[in-house]
Image (cartoon, rainbow, N blue to C red; front, side, top):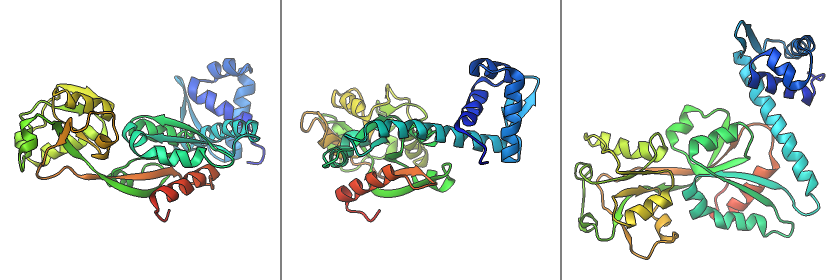
Length: 306
C-alpha cells in the first residue's frame, strides 16, 4: 500500500469513468499495456481485484466500489487542501456546508455569521439542494457536512458510513392563504384535505413522501397537486396567492420569510403531520478540523452538547 500514489487514484477514477482500458489509456495519454500493468500493480497492492474484465469493458467489483469511493474522497480532499493552503494568510479554513433551502434560509445565518466574523475568518461555501443530492455530495467528498432534515428511519437504515448529531426537531404544518375558510376551522381531517387543491414538493422528495404518508395513514388517496415546486419558500408564495394549500417544514419559515405579515395561516389538522429531525451530518473516519469548527459554531447558536 505504501507504493500507492495519488496518480494511481487518478487512474482508478478515469478507469471508472471511461469503463475501459482503451478509453482510459487515451484519456491518461498512456499506452494500453502500460495502463494494464499499472492496474495490476494497484490491485496487487490492495490484495484483490478492483474491476471485472469483460468483453464490454471494466466493471467495479464490490471491493472496487469501496476503493473507488475512497479514491474520490482523497482526490477531493487534496484539492481542498491546496485551496486552503493558498488562502491561509487570510482565512483559517474553508468549510463546505450543504443544506436544503428552508434550513439555509431559516436557520443558518447565525451559524455562518459566527464562522465568518471571527478574528481570523473562515470562508463558507454553501450548497442548497434537496436532501438526496446533498447526501450524494457528502459521500463523494464534495462537501464537509450537512445541516438538514434527516428522518430517523433513514438514520436507522444506515446511510453509508455517516455520523449524525441531532440539533433540534421541526414540526411540519399544513398552511393556506389567510382568506381560506379552513384556517378558521378548529379541526380538519385528511379526508377533507384530500378535496383541496395542493401545492406540493416535487415527486420523490422527502416532503412529498411525508404528505403522501399522511393521507395513506388516514386511509385516503393522496391528491394530485395542482403545482409542484422544489423550493419551500416558493411554494409558500403560491399558497399566499390562494393557488392551493401546502405544507411547510417549520412555521418559522413563514415568520422569517419575505411574505406580508399574516398572508399565510396554519390549518389545524388532526392528526398533525410528523416532526422531523434537523441534524449535523458528516462522514465517519479521520478527524476533520473543518467539521470541528462548524460544530463549535453550532454549539454557540443552539447550546447543545455536540
